[in-house]
Length: 570
Image (cartoon, rainbow, N blue to C red; front, side):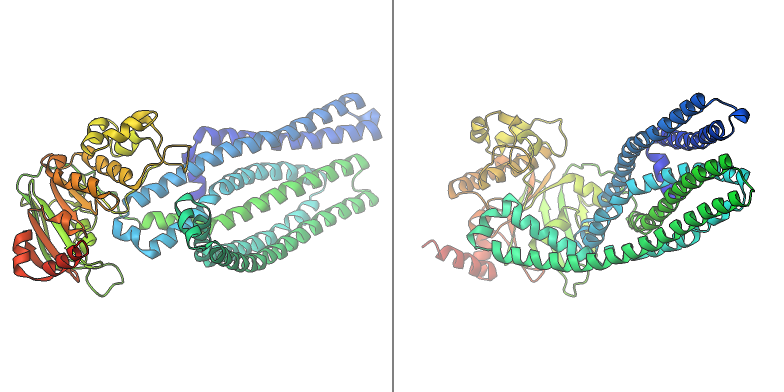
C-alpha cells in the first residue's frame, strides 16, 4: 500500500490514465475470446451462429488489434509515470540529506547507507510502478477470463489458479535473496566506483600518470570485478532456479487445463466451439496469471528496498527552521568548548576559549591535526559543541542562525562546473556578482574571459575555460564576499596563490573584507602577522594567544614554529 501511495501522490492523472489502459487491455482480451467463440460458431455451426463468418472474423481482427495496441500505450505511460515516481523518491532522499548535519553526513556509516539507497532503492520505483499497474490490469484480466472459464467449465479455473501459490512463495524467496545480495555488495560497489573515478575523471588524470599508477589501480579494479562476478554469478543462478521452478509450475497448470479441455470434448461435456473459446481463454488467462505473478514478484522484490528507503528517510532529523542572518555588533565567543567525532576517543577540540570581536581579524595556527579546522566549523555553526557554550553578541543563537551569519571558505573549496557568475552567486542569484569579483581581485581574470561573467568554468560538463589554482581561489573568495555575512572563516585562503598575489591579499585584507570580522587559518606565518590576535592550537587545545609580537616575546610554540618557517627563507 505504501508503494501504491507513492505512485498516486507522484502523478494522480497519470495513474488514472495508466489504469484506463490496463482496463482497456483486459476488455480487449475478453473481446478476443468472445470474437473467437463467434468465429468457431460460424465455422462449425453456421446455422446457430449469431454472426456470419465475415463479421466474426472482422470482430476478431478488431479485438486482436485493440488488444495488441494497448501494450505500447501501457509501456509509454508506465515510462512517464515511472519517471514521476522516481523524481518523487529522489525529492524525499534529497530532503533527508539536506536535514542531515555535517557530523552525520561525514560519518562512514551514513555514507555507506546513502550509497546503498542510491544504488538500489532508487532503481525500484519504476519497477514498483510497472508492477502495481500490471497487477491491477492482470487482476481485471484474470477476473474476466475466469468468468469465461466458469461459464464453459468451472473445473478449469482451479487448475490454473493452483500455480499461483508456489509462484508467490518463490517470489518471496527471490526478494529475500536479492536484498541480501545488494546489502552484501554495497561496499564493493562503492570501492569499484571510486576506482573508476580515479581512472577516468580529469582531476585525477595528472597525478595518476605522474605516479604511473594506472596499472596498479586497474589491477585493483579487476580484482573487484572478479569478486563482483563471483557474487553476481551465484545470485543469478539462484534467480534462474527460482524462475525455472516458477515456469514449470505455470506450464504444468496450463498443460493440465488444455488436457482437461480435450477430455471434456471427448466426454461430450462441451462442443468444439466452446472448446476453442475455452482454449483461447485458458491461454489468455495463463498470460494474465503470468503477469499477475510477475507483478507480485516485482512488488515482493522491491519491498525490502523501499522499506530500506522509508527507514532511511524516517531516521533523518526533523527539518530545521531556516536561519536568519544576524549583524555582529560585539563579537563571537566560545567558552570551554569541547567536541569529539563519533567513534573517536580523543577530543578534537578540548576546552577551548576563543573570541572574535566585530571587525577583527583573528588567526588560528598550529601543526596538522591540532584541531584548527574543527574549531572553525564550530565557530561557523557547522558543528555543535558537545560541551561548553557559543555566544553571538552575548546570545546563544540556534546553529541555523549562525550558519546564515558566517561564510566559510574551505581549503578544498568546490570548483563548480558553472559560469563565473553562478560560481559567485551560488547562495542567492540576486546580488552584485561583478562587485564581489572585483573585491576578490578578479578584474584582470574577468577581462580575459571570452564571455565575461557568463563564461562557463571547468571542463567536466561543458567545454568551458579552466582557471589556475590561484584564480579559482579568488573565485571562492568572491563567493564568500558576495554572501556578505559579518564573519568570514578563511581556511588557508592563500594556499594556491603566488607570493605576489598572497602579498596583495594580506596587505589589503581589511579593505577586502570591508569591515567584516574574519577567522584566518593558515600555515604561513607571514600571513598571520597582521592579525589582531593569534591563537595557537596543539592537540585540540589553545596553548597560546596574543599578537605576533607578544607571542614572539613569549618564546613559546608560536615563536618556535615561526623561526623554523622563516629560516627556510634565509
